[in-house]
Image 1 (tube, rainbow, N blue to C red):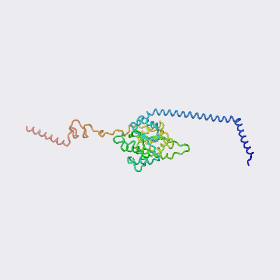
Image 2: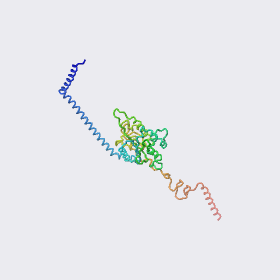
Image 3: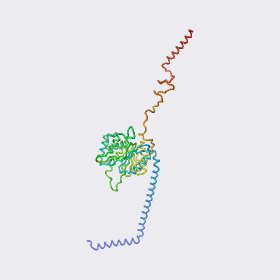
Image 4: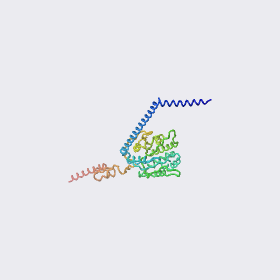
Amino acid sequence: MIDFRYHLVSLISVFLALAVGIVLGAGPLRGTISDQLTGQVEGLREEMGALRAEIDENRASMADTTAFIESAAPALLDGVLPGYRVAVATFPGVTDDVTSAVSQRLEESGAEITARVELTADWADPEAEDVRDEVAAAVRADVPGATAADTSDVVLGSALALALTGASAGDPRQPSADAQAVLTALTEPSSDADALVRVEGQAAPADLVIVLTTPQVAPESGATADPALEPTNVTWALTLAALAEQSPTVVAGYAAIDTDTLIRVRGERSVATVDGLDTVAGQVTVPLVLAAVAADEEPAPYGFGIGAQDPLPARQELSGPPALEPAPDPTSGSGDDEGATDGTDDTEGSGAEDGTPTGATDASTAPEDASSLLDGLAGVGAGGDGR
């Protein structure tokens, strides 16, 4: 049984230990402990200062690199896309600053932006699958090569390619009837959902398509990613792969974390991609990759992010979009000389209407002419004998 004396001894022990600690801390151990703590604080302070200096140095170096790329970009991009028409398609949430920066690089490369469209969230929202199925059914008959076995994602990707690049056979600067019909279907909102595509201004046929994507936010430590993110990325990837199959396309975005849409697109291995869209380096790379696609180079992932293969492609020397090259004149290039109507050479002096040069004797009449000449000579000789 615990009595009062037990509690008293316990309290005395506690206070005795506290007193001993105070005496030692204020006496012989005071200098040692104080020196150790002071040394640790000074070490941490110096380490923090070194890290701050390193950060400042890296920031200054990055600023210098960015300034250099900014200054070199016009010379680097000059003539990369001479006269090429480009359609710019953006994911929902792409900022105006990014779009403007990419547009500037395209213009510096000699390209002309003929269409600006925004792909709305319903394009890949798992809850809007019925809307996509309805639109895909409406445009399936107008999309070249679309079959009943193709999924809605594939049909819509092909339909977007037709809407952005389909040109009239008579005038390559005017959209074809099928392209107009498909674009109308994509831009018409349904009764319970928004349109899949919003068009800024007027859209004209393009030779190349650039798609700008958005970054994903990394989940907090210990948190799980949004379960709807993976099916959304799969839908985007299938759609953009179908788009790239039907028209020369580059997808630009971000590859910093595994859930970024561009990572899933790179998994298709059939689409040229560029990461670092929010950097000057990434924005300058976009026209170079578009030129590689226009030159029928194999699609590859470019940049410095996850899955990138090379920083940028080799420069291509393009002369202009084939769609805008003038058609050959059927009346020229026949090789006929002026004045020759029957395919034969006309010689000096008319009279060779049958293709025989003037002054040449027909071989079929040569024996008859020689016989007449001999008969005439014989007659002259007979007349001289009679005189």
